[in-house]
Image (cartoon, rainbow, N blue to C red):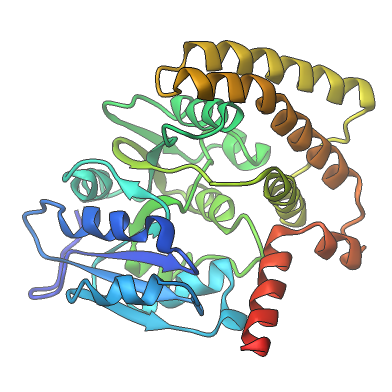
Length: 336
């Protein structure tokens, strides 16, 4: 357990926002309600919101706000900036739509690092929202059930297998809900300033440096991306291009392979929808009809993004959700 400076908060909870009004109030209410024996602070780093985000933040007087222009936002660089602004010994990152579950979430996220000196990074569990579409529910639950027990802590240490295979279970990391030592970010292992997958690289860097990573099953948040079919295609494209940019191999898919994956996920989605108690009868019918459309959209996007040349910047930008949102923000800012 590392020494914590007298008078300083134990942790800084950092929430990155951009037009996040839909879920932000619940996020901040859950954060400020955390039960922790030591003091902690909450820092919101906003990158040019034009909706009600700033008004919501103003209703939480104990929350510190730092604003940057949208043009300055970059996943890795902005998180490094947040670490420099933080006062806590530990920095805990949340996205604007990740709602902590229970009032001991923060305790659970910090406990592995406080008890085990070798642990330098923690990734918490994600639970999909009740109304999330079936394909995404299944994917979220599969990813996090593979990480370890939902009722305990699982520790991963660096090995040759972990370092060489890229995006496997041990090196998986997600900044939707994560925590690390501030000194690590300010010193030997800052986030890499890449366009996408900065969290996956950070998890791998921690293990490669000889440290350990923990999965905190009880450090859970409610989170699933609220995406239209068009946004799903673009986000899937972004994620696939992002991991290719940082050197992870994404194999090309043939038409036959894509069809098999589509059929598999449609069948799983049908079974999941019928069994899901969160859906009303009418919603079950809706998802039985429309989940296959989301499945087809996802796998078509994976196939396209695995085949496109990374050097074809015009095509990459035209299919990117990040690029389209930035363009829309610029247009609204200029017209305003």
